[in-house]
Image (cartoon, rainbow, N blue to C red; front, side, top):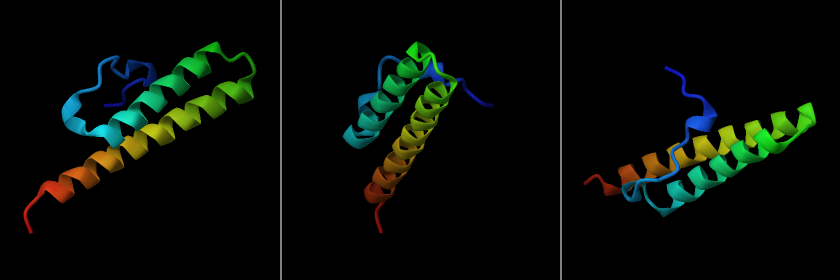
Length: 71
C-alpha cells in the first residue's frame, strides 16, 4: 500500500536512529516546501527530494539494523 508523502508523521520515533531521523525530517520539510511552491517544476523538484530523503532514511535504518545484528 502506498502512503501519501504528506502522511509523514510529525513525531519521529527515537528508535530509528539519528541519521534516519534527519532524513525523515528533511523529507517532511521538502513536502511542506512543495505545498508552498507555485511553479509546477518547483513542486515536482521538492516532491522528488522528499522521496529521495525518505529512501535515504529507509537505507540508513536498514544499515543500522544490520550493524545491530550479531555476526
